[in-house]
Amino acid sequence: MLKKVLSQFSHCPLCFQELKLEPSKIHCSNCDYESFYIQDIPWLFKHPQKELLYWKQKSQNLNQYFLNLENQTETERQNTQNLKTTNTRLEKLKEAYQQNRKTLQEILNPLWEKEQDSSSFPLLSETSLGQEVNAYYANIFRDWVWGEKEIQRQKELLHPYLSSQKGASLLFFGTGAGRLAWDLSQNHDFSSFISIDINPLLTLTFQKIIHNEKLKLYEFPLSPLSIEQTAILHSIEKKERKNSPSHFIYLFADGMNPPFRKQSFDTILTPWFIDIIPMPFKDFSQRVNTLLKPEGLWINFGPLGFEKKQVSQNFSPEEIEEALTASDFQLLHAENKKEPYLASPYSRFQREEVIYLFIAKKIKSSKTPKEFSPNPKWLSNFQAPIPIEPYLQEEAIKNKVQFEILAAIDGQRSINDICQLMVTHYKMTEEKAKEALLFFLSNLYKKYH
Image 1: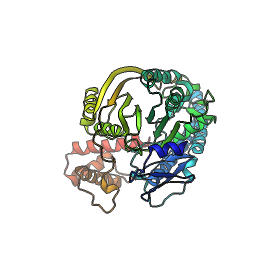
Image 2: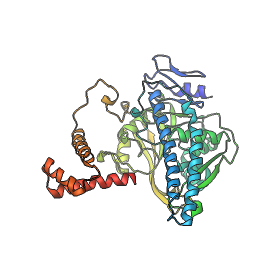
Image 3: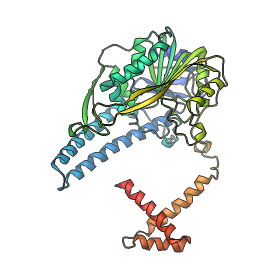
Image 4: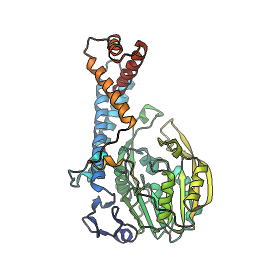
């Protein structure tokens, strides 16, 4: 079924021609594109080796993160001034960090089973944008342990619009830990349901759960209700042992440049997605338009927590609606809904979001947007000149000053001594020099303590 569905909907991420799916590899019939599977899940990125190396690096970072926490808790436990209950908590945390590190390593192990092209560079991910592999880790527990109410409310929100989509082909952006995509594929009669994501930890965890594997992972509530809930070991499994529907497939792919043919889908669903991607909403709405069939539906819900550096791109609902019209959609419905979000019963931190739901119908084909990349060309083409940008010049000055400050620290000089060196060398007032020095050194201290 996987081969049949992907042959119908997907195309080469490089040249947009037909993809060939073979048992051991995925390749293009027209260009030299070649990719692979991670634990039988298609890895359909434009630059598969670069993305693989990026996520390998992030999985190493995650392992080191938990190892550092293990060491830190053990070191702090040796403090003879600790309360008895503090040592109890630290012992519990150390055990939890240790077990989680081993379990997460096992989940991510399929990344390491792939041979790596040594010419790839991990910093050049076109899709991940600095996302850590454990981003949205709490969603695993929300989806499969204690978040039944949240998931049910989302399904109820979508039901009036999906119930009319019998026999439709649906593309779901952002599988995450997978519960919503899984339930929707089970509860509605779609002809095809394709779900995509970039994060290997969430996707590989989801795969284990729907294959009826039982996982044991610790949850670390932000503000636990008691010392016992500082780290909670959950046994995670699918409650109903239903098999995966034949029309449901999930894969690794870039939601900003999806590897799918034009006018392939009857319905596109973007839950909690549009505000976390760097692609401008106007361009993304054109991307959605090109993927939808005539009169296809775009269903979106989630917050509008845009945090783009360009303030003009942080859209309000009114700007969203204007952009939809400009991208040749007819807005059928829009509303705000207050919903719980990641409301762990073990935490004092209970969050609600006012989400924005819209239903839009494609009324005609829009302009096809260019391939989106968050990186400038000179980070991909190593022979291209690096332009002189104001931020680079500012960083050059700042780093030079910081280097000289650190070089002046010899175990003997005080803040006043180094301040006088700055006054002499940079012709600064003593007040400005001391202000800059304290800002730099205090931030540096906080970073490591």
